[in-house]
Image (cartoon, rainbow, N blue to C red; front, side, top):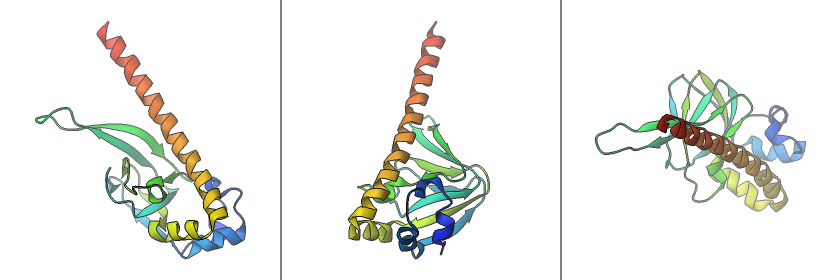
Amino acid sequence: MVSAKLLKQYAFFKGFTEAELKKFEELTSEQSFKAGYQIWKKGDQSKSLCLLDEGKVVMVRESYLGAHRPPMQVTVDIITKGDVMGWSAVVEPYLYTLGARCIDDTKVITFDAEKLREILNADKALGFKFMHAIAKVIAARLTHTEIILVGERGLSVLTEL
């Protein structure tokens, strides 16, 4: 269990009251992973939302280029201390949209997805506030994806010359 006081230190929870954060305490835990560990793959059932406490995690998308070629991994984002990953835990169909692999030894605070959704559904005002914070995470991830796409398009144009 992670205290409300500790959660309050993270930017994601800026604007949440101590009483609101106390509702999340019971569904949190801490987990550690070694560098190289794949936390989840794209398409896995989203069982937790994670707040990165230590280390770095790369968010990747695999692109398949043919039956006899290995998949190519495209880095969409690098998650660092204080960042949230696994927003799919609160957005249907509750499947991860990217893979998550540790590039350093990593420690995360996890929120049980099912219990989190129960809390957010029971307290609509808290649910709205939480989903507003999640929308910021999704928007940032989309911006990073757009930057990567623009970079790849530019690179492909340059290599055609």
